[in-house]
Image 1: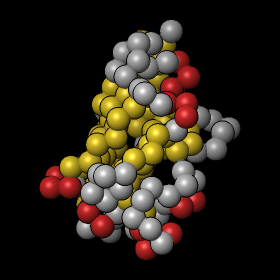
Image 2: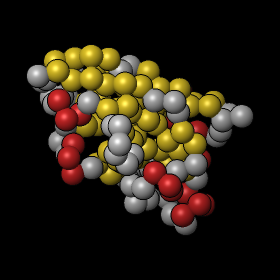
Image 3: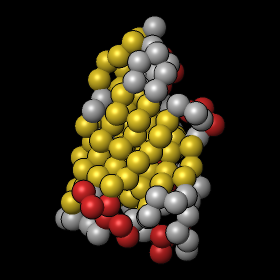
Image 4: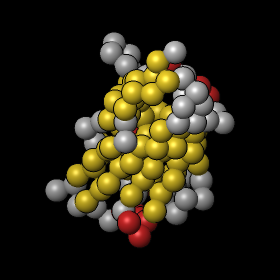
Length: 130
């Protein structure tokens, strides 16, 4: 059974930083492309970052360009999201997700649609106050 568990969220002031973590089990970690999404009530889940299987291809959403860094450590089956210069509009539930490249036919980051991804964590809340 595949499990993905996020941690590291919290309440911070604008301008601060957070490092979100995602531990996985039940899948061959290096076989999957990984992504981070975020969602606020009443809105669609937004893809903010993606990293290819071996960390050589990245995607970052326009709204977070320059402030996020996605990192994967294949030997630890772990995924991270470093968020700097946090803004109130970054307040959301953050989710990690995984997809096999065979699902969409490539090893690069797919289009940042939630429907593309197969496995999901339960989320970790990030709240940024001004």
